[in-house]
Amino acid sequence: MKDLSTANFDTMTTDEFQEYLPELFAEGGGNVSKDPRFAKFLENNPVCAELVHDLETIAETAKSLFEPTHEPSDDLWNKIAGKLHEPEEEN
Amino acid sequence: MQTKAAPGFFKRNPPIEGEAEAIERAKNGDAEAFSFLYGLHKRRVYTLTLRMLGNVSEAEDMTQEAFLHLFRKIGSFRGESAFSTWLHRLTVNLVLMHLRKKGLQLVSLEETINPSEDDAPKRDFGARDPSLAGSVDRVTLERAVASLPPGYRMVFLLHDVEGFEHNEIATMLECSTGNSKSQLHKARLKLRELLRQPENLVALEAMKEAKR
Image 1 (cartoon, rainbow over the protein chains, first blue to last red):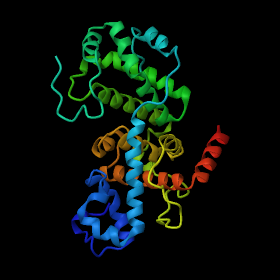
Image 2 (cartoon, chains in turn yellow, cyan; image 1 turned 90 degrees about the vertical axis):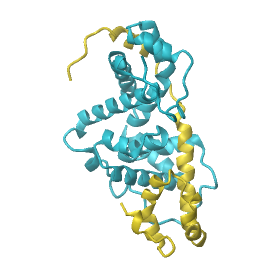
Image 3 (cartoon, rainbow over the protein chains, first blue to last red; image 1 turned 30 degrees about the vertical axis):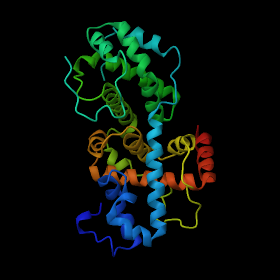
Image 4 (cartoon, each protein chain N blue to C red; image 1 turned 45 degrees about the horizontal axis):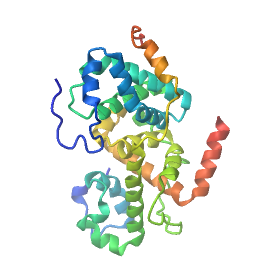
């Protein structure tokens, strides 16, 4: 992981930017495109701007997956209920 | 008596009507209250285990394990986080324990989490590839996530879908926080590749199906 404290966002290359990205996303809560520190760099590097936009879109859409989409079989509760008072199995 | 939760805990897990009362009754061994809690949370727990394991039969087994474990441990729930967050953490830990028993028990996930070179995302920014065109549909993303190598999939699900912090994921996966951040980034890059070139996603799905 690259150390952000030594980064110069005005002079860095696109490769360097990509090396900083995991930390930038973690540090900024996923809002790299709105961070004024990178505005100039992203304006001058549209490929990086597109990458950031795509990764932000993926992270944002992922939140919608929190809502469940699958259902267990109808008899699962009966299996669980039948075992509720059994002693815990040894691991 | 429940401890007051910190602000923000219920952002993605708003309180559900009747849940708090059912929790208190279930703590006293009320099976009907426990059945109510199962009804409220079965879909989320099952969806989580299915996404982590990618196998319907194993997912049902782990859902059963999670609720049996919940029944035994519900007395230790103090309300310091939303109940669903607590239940999901319990479920994730059971699934990870299950995976370790299946073959990862001797090596930390940090070492086994890294997929092969073929599975890793390309370093190239891919300017010539089509862009995501502004949005990603939920169904296609779900398919792409299912096609990720297990290590990437796990970190992506825990962070971007379930909302766990990197330090929590590092504890669960027995890896460093930096590793969690790095794996998440690689997972998103890999998803980007798959979403920009859907033919690769179809090919991966066909390969996965052929292995079954």
